[in-house]
Amino acid sequence: MPSEKNLVFIYNADSGILPKMKDYGHKVAEEEPGGCNLYAVTHSPIGMKKEWRRFVNDLGITARFLSRNEFSSEFGPGSETFPIAFIQAGKDLTPFITTDEINQCAHLDDLISFVQQRLKQFQGKTG
Image 1 (spheres, helix red, strand yellow):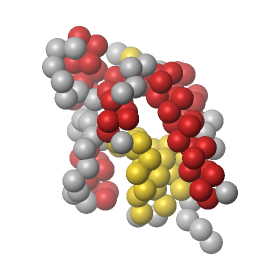
Image 2 (image 1 turned 180 degrees about the vertical axis):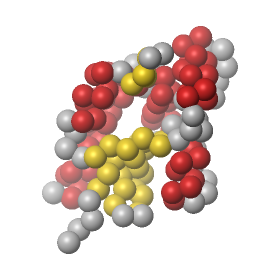
Image 3 (image 1 turned 90 degrees about the horizontal axis):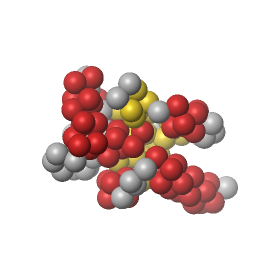
């Protein structure tokens, strides 16, 4: 029986609310590079944007969201840059969206379109 696949998004932040709030503030204020664009486009100051939550809930594949340190704890240290997204099957990770691709998304609609396009490509390979 094939293992269930998940879509795993990893933020460029460690777990905890203060680092996430700091990253959001840095993106909005454009104070310095190196914040988390994934977090900035998918969250508002009060939490995950409703449009993004609905989108990931309706994808047809389970979406998980991890911080850098949660990712390292679960999968071990690696050479990945963050933010990034993978397709996970068991312990196997297949690159889904690169750091550069996520960072090119200026708005939530850009990211949603990119995820939709990439899922169609992956489904075409496995279907």
